[in-house]
Amino acid sequence: MPEMIIREAMAKALREALDDNKDAFIMGEDIGAYGGAYAVTKGFLEEYGPDRVRDTPISESAFVGSGIGAALAGLKPIVEIMNISFSLLAIDQIVNHAARFRYMSDGQFTVPLIIRTVTGGGGQLGATHSQSFEGWYASVPGLKVVVPATPYDALGLFRTAMKDPNPIIFAEHSMLYGTKGEVPDEWYEIPFGRASVKREGNDVTIIAYSRMSHVALQAAEILAERGREAEVIDLRTLSPWDKETVLRSVRKTNRAVVVEETWRTGGFAGEIASTIHEEAFDDLDGPVARVGGEDVPTPYAGNLEDATIPDANKVVKAIRDNFGI
Image (cartoon, rainbow, N blue to C red; front, top):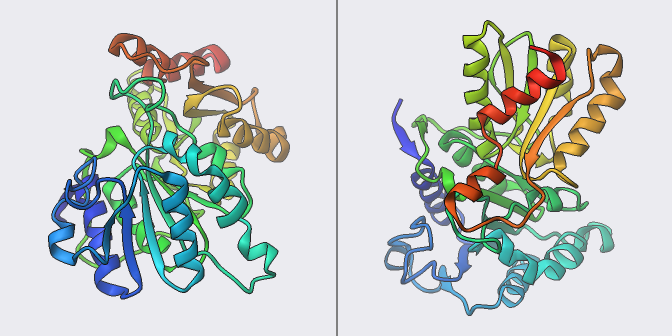
């Protein structure tokens, strides 16, 4: 099976989208002549032309609004917001318009819009470029939120996104673009709301998504050296999220920890933990643990930034402190 990195998987996904759907086009800041801030769309302008690869002004509200209008008119816009922090400039368009049209029109209008954006810290980009707001958007009815952690998932989930008539936040972690993985030549798609069990185990369930799925696997390796086997679940999508797979695992292991990069206070991990407590309380040997980012703006200094982001040792410590294993 051939290997590729996530950057290549996303470029492949976008090329498929433009090749297979005459109504699809992409637009955003620096995606054309510059080739994209993360080089995903390098060469696209020369390949597809300015009608289908559109550089936009630096106005997220304007070009997201344009994307919504295009989607309402029957096109399939793929809008790139360079960083999820910049989506705050378009949050009215995203939350009050894209997410609401289908409901408020009683299904007469749909908004088949994909918003690709980059999330997460770790790259020393400072407090306003290192945030993770995908959990915020997952709380908004009408939006779907996708958080791939591997090239296989990125391609399969984007193929599903292209067929979905709803607005989608497709959040790609900035530190995962170079992550390598196997991607089959045969066509496949990954349904939304279906988590991936990355590792099986019987002692504790570790639930994560995006970059934290890799941290969870690292923590499982440390636990294995101590004779404990963790089951690692990568959610892959936050809205919808795969409650059934999580609960099935927790009922097997009787212990759970949720790992999330964003601030611990108000994170989506709290929603997952609450659901486990509500629906699998009698199966638990102790309260669900949460490991999240420190509740501070992200520092610029690399050593300080690293201290704010969960790592494998923090996950292992949380498991030891909460469950004694």
